[in-house]
Image (cartoon, rainbow, N blue to C red; front, side, top):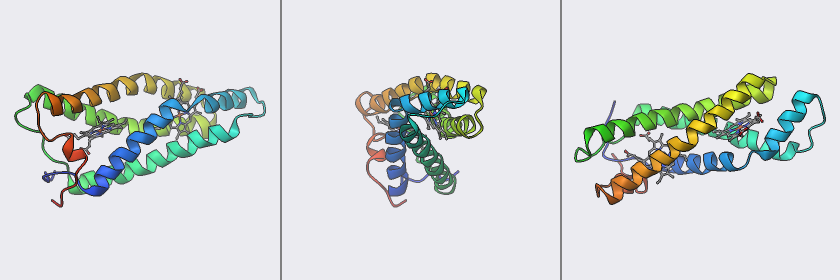
Length: 164
Ligand code: HEM
Ligand code: HEM
């Protein structure tokens, strides 16, 4: 895979927009839980507006993640800094793979639950949250450690674009 010097502007915008939308989804899901429970019970869905907000933001994440992964495959991503211990670079890479996985796993399990009323898929969606939240925490700690402990450009390169 190609190893450009940094991320492109579109990669950076997609990273931060997706991050904001994922955090929104983790915080705003009360209505969709109520509406989904009503739906399974065959009752009228009172919180439909809030539920549809969660559904549409979630589907948006799926589309943006697909675009982002496509760009990642074509353009690549910068190599990790060699001064960071190899084990930490490996952990960073594994975290990124896991996060990409969640960007597909969460919308897909949510969509199967919502559109086909599949309870098992809703359970997977909920378990997904339990793993996703610590993974994001680990990712943020890693980014801050690169910046403040290893004092390299890892955080800055997700803020400033490079042409190649
Ligand atoms: C990255 C995208 C998404 C994230 C991070 C996310 C996150 C969440 C979270 C944290 C919950 C509460 C789980 C719980 O504690 O019970 C939830 C519930 C739910 N979400 Fe999502 N969601 C995403 C995308 C979607 C999409 C695209 C749909 C549907 C098309 C969806 C449908 C649902 C449904 C139906 C529930 C209720 C499940 C239940 O109460 O058992 N989600 N979501
Ligand atoms: C909340 C949801 C988030 C998700 C799903 C997410 C996901 C990802 C993924 C998949 C990558 C790998 C990019 C690639 O190589 O294609 C990445 C990189 C990065 N993320 Fe996040 N991220 C999130 C939040 C954050 C936050 C809050 C920060 C800031 C502290 C952050 C800082 C970074 C940095 C600095 C990189 C670049 C790492 C490098 O160049 O080696 N991310 N993120």
